[in-house]
Every structure is written in structure tokens, then in C-alpha cells.
Length: 410
Image 1: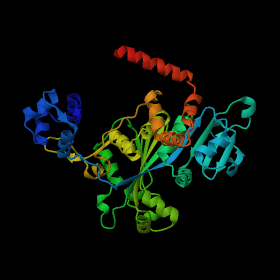
Image 2: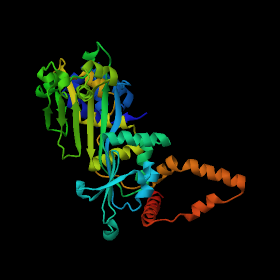
Image 3: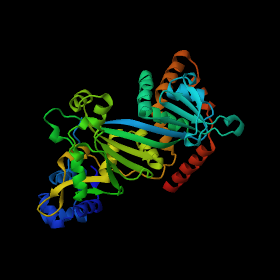
């Protein structure tokens, strides 16, 4: 079973502000026993570490059905997208003829293809200039429209991104928004939900610890201004970070926005849509790329988003007998039970393992079919497929690296 390193245990204890003696008492261990964990004399399993954290108020497990994750904005750049017709057919599951064309000056492009809220940018004069750079943009509504196309083909978002990243090796995820919706627990249970005005008070009381997102600001009124006519506005929003940074949070009272949009009461909004707050995590550039690479390698998207929030924001509610902050129960209900996740700002290098993962996900079923068909028809299509491939320059570089590692091992 995996063990927690003594260094990480000490770092966690120091972040609580407690001495070894105080920490041991708080987690109901003899001081000598705790010190043996921190010194490395005893091994501390991850499961035991979670048990200890639970005694401090941190959640050991994530409570299901509290948050719903969805992709809410995507922008992907393609340095050289020559065949738009093939791109639409094979990856967007629609035809280029379904798009309308118009001039644009957005993002320094001159040409825009539109299919509802699914947009593709490129250049009118690309044939003459040989500049085949293009950009796919899906707004929030565009993501919903894309989901309809994907569901019709039985394709998931994860497979969609896998296909793009492996077919267009130089494509880059420029922006990705993940929306985490806090679901409404029902009439009479409103006190169990996160109330953004309470978070504002915690920020002023310095009971919220921000790691890298040092800046925050508030817009809107909502219950923060004690406005009784809440249906008339969009509610309260808290922004963490800078729009120019690679990570940016927007927490807002989605229930009020929906009530205003649909011209219905707040009570109707909650009962119809079932959404209390929305926690929007905006990734850009390398962090957006890193998020999608985590996703295509099998990590749940909601788990990624919650892990990033858990890494950047810790919410507390008062102190214990040792003067250390106590984790806020409601915040732990939503974002506890998951390990903090720090996304790398450096794109992961292409690797042989990545190729194997893609073949396993995307090609293995088809190859199994061809192999069985060869046996039945006494053909050699599998051999034909293998012989038709060529090793690229990057492939040769990878093979040389594998050989060098093999020699080093021996």
C-alpha cells in the first residue's frame, strides 16, 4: 500500500499551525507515535493519513451527487489545418456545408465558419499565403450543441479530445472552462448549501487561505446586499485570480441568474433547474493543455476541477483549542475527499507510452476485428496495415531514446 512521505506529513502539520504535540493530541495519538511517523521511523499509509485528517475536520471521502461537472467553453488552435471538410466530418461529426461563412476580425483571423455556436476561425487567403492556422471555439451553448453531435455518434468528450490530440499532434488547448454546479438539496435544506456572502465574510476574516490566486473581487448584489427582490438581478459573484493568468475562478449564485433569464421566481428556478451555485474554473494555455492531458489519460474531469480548487483554496470556520483553523464543514462536503492537484505549466512531452495508450483506447477493437476477419477470409489485411506505416523523424528519435535507456539498464 502507498505510503505518505514524512516530508509531506510534516508540511501538512506545519500548514495547520500546530506543534507536533498539539497535532498529535488533535488526532488522538501519543506524541511519540506521531513523531515516529514524521521522522519516518514508522510508515504512514495513505488510508491512515486520511483517517488522521478526518479527525481534524477534513473529509475522508467525497460525497457523491453534490457537484455536477460539465465542459462550458473550449478553444483549440491548429497551426496547420488544411482539410476543413475532413476535420468536420471525422471530428465534429457534421459537414462543412452546414456552416455559414462570414468575415471577422476576432482573434486576428479574417474568416469565420459558423454552425450555431460551433465556430471555426481561419483565413480567407490561406491558399495564397499558405497560412493554414485555424481555431475551433465552443462557447457554453456551443459545448451543448457539440454534445448533441457526440451523443448521436456515441462519443464521449474524453474520446473527442483523445482523437484530436493524437490526430493533430501540434494542436493546443488554449482555453478550457469547467463548470461545477452545486446541486440544490431541496426545500428546507438551504442552510446546508454554500452561501457566497459567508465566503465573503471568511475572506475578510482571513479564514480563507489562497495559494497562488492572491487577488479576489466581488460583483453583483444578491443576499450580500440584503436585497429582497433577488429575482431582479444575477446574484453575487466572487472572482479569484486574474483574467490574464492561466487559472481563474468565478463562483456565482447561478440560481438567481437562471431566475432572471427565464423570468421566473427564485423558488421556481431551484425546483426546475436544481442548481444552487456554480463554480467555474477557467484554464488557459499550458494549464488548459495540462488539464486535457490529465483527462484523456483517464482522470475524471470533475475530479480534476475539484482537485485544483482544493489546491488553491482552503476555507476554514473558526479555530480549535490549539488556535489552528478548523476546516469548514460545508466546503469540505463539496471539495473535500480529493487530493489537491497542481497542474504543470509545462506541456508533457510526447512519449511512447502515450502512443500505446492511444492505440489501446482507439484502435485495439478495430485491430481485433481485422485479425479475426483475416482468419475467416484467409486474408492478410493485418500485415498490410502494419507494412503501410512509416516511422517518422520523431518516431526515430523516440526509438533512439528507448535504445539508450535499454543500454543504461543493462
